[in-house]
Image (cartoon, rainbow, N blue to C red; front, top):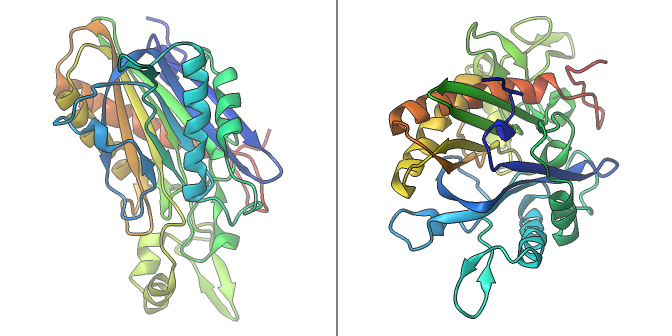
Length: 332
């Protein structure tokens, strides 16, 4: 099976981005117009979400028609309204008898301090993202919800690095494909899970005659947090200014309860590639979508969802270019 190594390798998934490159904010929509059985798992301590309660297996609605990921902090949740407008125009939604109501869960990240805090994703930007959506490989890097994303913030924004959107997919046998899309705006560093080496994160610096950093390039957030200086800085850090978001998808027939488990297992991809993760300063959230009729074991799907998500996290930093005064790894 030939893959484009994007979440759109899962049939029925479309991805669209809209952004304001000057204000450094944007949104990303993952459309599943025929509906997808969905689960969610929120592990960060400072989340901003919409319609996640309905994904509880105890609740009625089992299928969603899109997931919206956006910058703009809590203001960015309004982008989901534009997605609802687009889907309603297409007559897509949960049939209540009186109307079809599109089901659009959403989650946001904080990017107000990199570009313009006065410009945030809104309903019109969400609608434009839908117009750009396609089954082609997702754009990566400084696009959509990743336009203002960054990583490695213990020493403040000036010592951080640019991040963005990344995507990946894995064929796990018998025609089953697991895909992931990540928007990485982490407090911590991004590491290569195969080597443990930092790929992007807090950059080393000097304060007076003192060098702060485990290497010439990176300070290493975990090492710094063990020091008196690092603990002091961390205690002064303000919450909710980070958050990594993800959507994982599979072309298999699984239940809402099973997809909730897949979302839980997929968080392991964040844990392998972001250090530290799930802090009180992050709002890390993973959505999981099942669309298609393939047979697959939920534990196998969850295991490879974590693998795909870890790959997507690495792509998010490797495909991001310099912006907002922060260096990026993409140089060409």
